Image 1 (cartoon, rainbow, N blue to C red):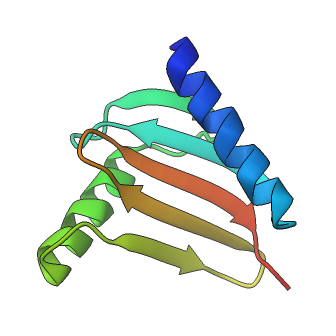
Image 2: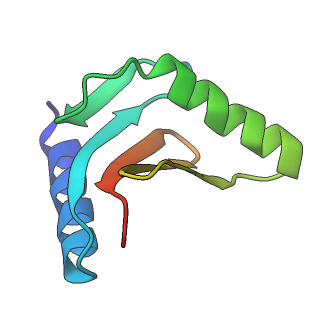
Length: 92
């Protein structure tokens, strides 16, 4: 994994820990769904990238998507160059 991306992932995890949210994993991919970096995520990145693209088309701008169930939550955010998915334990 690229050192810069690894640093970004670790910083993201630290920021979530500051607000007492347990991060289960982080996925970084390009807009086509090609994995750029991952930590503790084994889910295919294609649907994550597509969902970010659909959300941007619906809203007319880049949007953060939140999917959740009773136990888990995933936050998906598209930047200019990448899509980031952060998997967390659902906040109680």
